[in-house]
Amino acid sequence: MASASLGLASELSSFSKTNFLSSADLKSSQILSLFELAKQLKSGNRRIDLGNRVLGLIFTKASTRTRVSFQVAMARLGGQTVDLNPQVTQLGRGESVKDTARVLSRYCDALAIRTFSQQDLEEYAEWSTIPVINALTDLEHPCQALADYLTIQEKFGKLKGINLSYIGDGNNVANSLMICGAMLGVNVCICSPKGFEPSSNILEKAKSLSKNGSKITICNEPSKSVIGADVIYTDVWASMGQEKEQLKRKEIFEKYKVDQELIDLAGKEVILLHCLPAHRGEEITDQALESQNSYIFDQAENRLHVQQALLAVQLGGL
Ligand code: CP
Ligand code: NVA
Image (tube, rainbow, N blue to C red; front, top):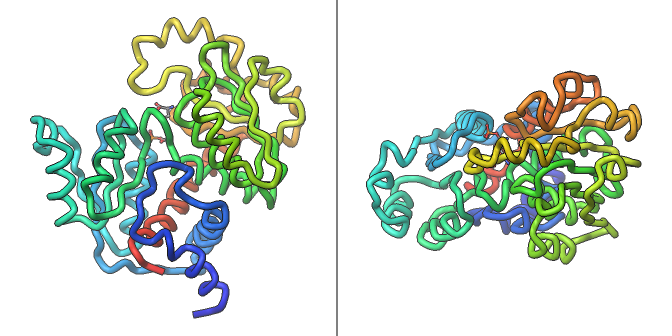
């Protein structure tokens, strides 16, 4: 094995067979090594064969990108996925997490779980003897944040000192962006309407993990937030599970739309990111999403590469 590969392997070895429940579960040096591995896999310079390992997918919410990118990542690693949607398992009839997690650990090599509460995810992790991956909860979306920062690193060639302005709801995506960004030396400003800012717990957690002088701030004024921004990021105003609040939120968030005016304030070099799915015309205009500032589809592609790297590490493929 070449020495560069050996370096990556030694940096990432402590993450083998471990859970990924929060962006805070990886150290900054491990995130950067994971990005190197993801880029090797993306370019075709590295092939990893996990030898028919199996990833179980428990998704209690809809998903296109996360589900398919995990499926394709496992296929490319010579493994496979099994769909453990609660509608087709005894979970849907009330079998406990405690029993389900122990049984599935006897069949699968890892579980990727999308659910509502972070506590449910932690309960799976407590009873599983295999790695559990957060495929989105109401609290965090750590796989998304990895793909986001990989995209930013590819575009700017660095992460330290990059200014990211997130415009919109202080939700799961914002939380993971703050925590992961803080560790990578990115200055993250979350700009939300009053009452929709991230919780003070998460803000404090992100600040406590801050490296290389990264500043994690909250504001309420989009036109101020984007000044000097390298990246403008947005997400839906009503997340999965908040559908009933959609109309009310549309009014409250109207000023938090990412449009050409906001891009012009930031300057022509700014890039736009959105985790998708987008509500075109609400949090982002069609024009902005299709503009040359938009790296949104590169970002979506990177879900695949970074998760393939993550699985290769967690399943002991290095
Ligand atoms: N960004 C994201 O997680 O997309 P899906 O909900 O389609 O998985
Ligand atoms: N905040 C959104 C992200 C979707 C990928 C949600 O939770 O629905």
